Image 1 (cartoon, rainbow, N blue to C red):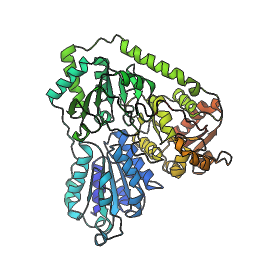
Image 2: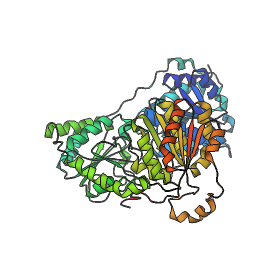
Image 3: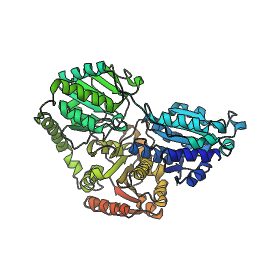
Image 4: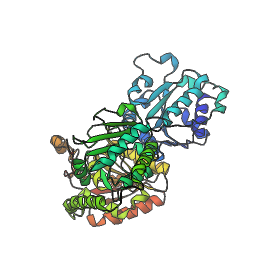
Length: 548
């Protein structure tokens, strides 16, 4: 058995069924021989995105895997891996490597050295006898602790060596996790119950821990409203009476209202990282933070009650501690839910003219509003792209439950959403998987729509074509003027049709809902679909950079 065949056998034992990849590397043929389906992309960054989206939807069980050739293949994948690292996504990367005699000789690209800053671990197979132990370490790091990309480089000469027969005895790695100190939980629970106006701030760690039901139970017990981070969007159902919505580069109105008034913020499954894609928490709050990574504690905020542990186990501990003090919990008299509803109604009233506008070119907010009325959020997985699509979608789209929305953005490569949607569809083929992107993002990765059409991955891509680059940034005025092509009239729907997909170009607001229905039907028939909406250069945004 060759090394690549041994790796493929281990992947199969770990539950891997798909291998997004870009030629040439012998692991592709080996995977196909092990009944793992290769999904060949048109550029490496999108292939990494496919593995990324797959891992997000499966919570890394099994993880997404991406394979690429050495040299330019590994170089081109870098920005996709950086995005996954910044969002703590567990995925396995398998780059080929230069043969041993060229490793470390300039100017050859060295994956092990180059990827160290953007991977959880990176290791090179330096002898065929160590395949099992190296892969075991890789999967152990994928399954335990803070999630993140893990890389195993396969030098091209070792790839075809004979592997140790012990590979056949490889056993899938079993994961474990830890609860928090009972004393720490007890002190934090007392503070939570003593708070006049607490807010629960949930991150994606809640989803990776499988703790969404426990989060809901605790929120209802203490009658505390819940907001989520950008990557944590969908950890709490946004149609729940206590749901404030998402706080990020732009935020739902109730998030700003309640965070401003909060006297305690309980962060669970979040790093509390301050950057452009998170809402800044105003000063003067009692801060509680539950995370599985000690490096998160006191990083950007002073934490009054630090708690280290798995999000699900910690939430169960809080539920028990609260019940010990309150019995069944605080009475659900509807007062807090009524306050949340009032804040939401007031915010939406301000935005309704844009959400229901009949103007042409249409505002993207009308497209978002009609999308929500046309597609059941519980039957879909939605993701956005960078810039305007993200800022416009995040506050208004109401996610229905875990992983029905894939938010991202700490290190945001334009075009990331297309790969995420394909990976989501592979992970959950019964869902309608939608990627919302701008025309600039389509220019970066649009040809990989052909990958979805060719590979039979029937996603729905929505292109908001405003013929403008970086509309949301006032300082990019020169770029606006250089890029504006309204008079030239590019047609992305024609391109999608030429690449083998179903497509429509929509210019009238009244046609938004019917077009979405037709595209949805096309995906149900197994066709990748693209809708190009001709939109205005919308710059208004909900609570952009709230609190700084």
